[in-house]
Structures are given as C-alpha cells and as structure tokens.
Image 1: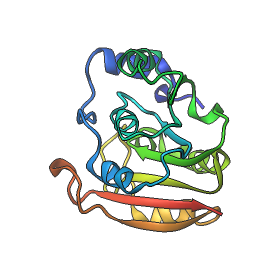
Image 2: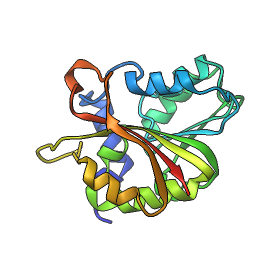
Image 3: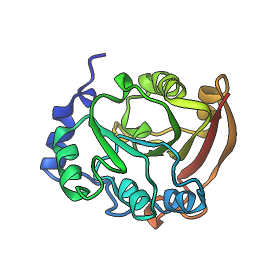
Image 4: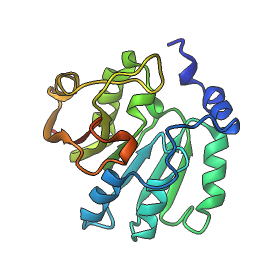
Length: 197
C-alpha cells in the first residue's frame, strides 16, 4: 500500500510539530468507563496506535498487569517508555511496529482513534488482524466515529458500514451511540464491543 499514513515518518512529523488535534490529553471518557467495568486485572490487553498512551497509563494505574501498547512511531514509543518507565518490562510491553505485522494473543483490544486514522481501504485488513490477535472469545472494545470528515485522517464512518465489516467473524455485543463522549465529540461517536467467534 502506498499511503503516507502507513509510515512512521508521517506520525513522527505530526507529533513533533504538535499537529495533534485528536489528542485530548487524558483517557477518553467512554474508554475509561469501559475499563472501570473490567474485573480481570490479568487480562491480556492490547492498545494499538497508542499515541501518547493515556488509556495505557490509566490501565496501569488501575492495576492491570498485562498491557501491551503498540505504535508505528518510534518518537511516540520512546516518549511512552520514558513516561511509563516504572511499568515497562513488568506489567507493560511497548512495541514499535506496524499493527498489521504484529503477532500475539490478547483477551481485549482497545480502540481509540486508531481505526479512524487508517485509510478506509485498510478497514477489512484491520478487522482481520484484530480477529487474528484476539483469543477465542476475545473482544474489541472502543470508540468509532459516526460522522463524515473532509479528507483525513481522521476518516469517518457510520454504523451500517461497521456492521457489515464485523458481521462475518464477530458478534456485535454493543454498537450504540456513546452517551458520555467529550463535548466536542458528542453525538458523533459509537461504542463498539465485538466478540470474536
């Protein structure tokens, strides 16, 4: 695929120049609420396209013991290793890599502004990779946009498209409007919980 958003240089440049309008500076409210409902602190959790890792830090602060963060940008993963150094190599693994070449098995994959950063032509690949990375009965959980954008990233989408994408290999447990989005995103987000079948 010849797309600049697939290169670490693209994301390095955005973060180095602070062109990060999507970065809210703290864990997404819908994700935080979901994390607060999880009871198995030993669940293997993957956060792809982790960026500045607010959800990652929150998981660790809540006592989760098996967290993996992945990002294609070495600038970001280096910052995260410094920021979260007390957990690195203990309860946290940080991987600098392309999500689509990642291997492993996870109970939960948390989605927060990674799916929407991918060109829409990669969405089927994303779904297949999530399916490969989840253990039987594992779940993808997180936030998807329910709106269109000019250009991208972010790239928008809608419920019917997501239902079509996930229907073959997942059971959609939840695909509903978020009732606790941050104010700028109110009415434009869906929460998804999709279980691998």
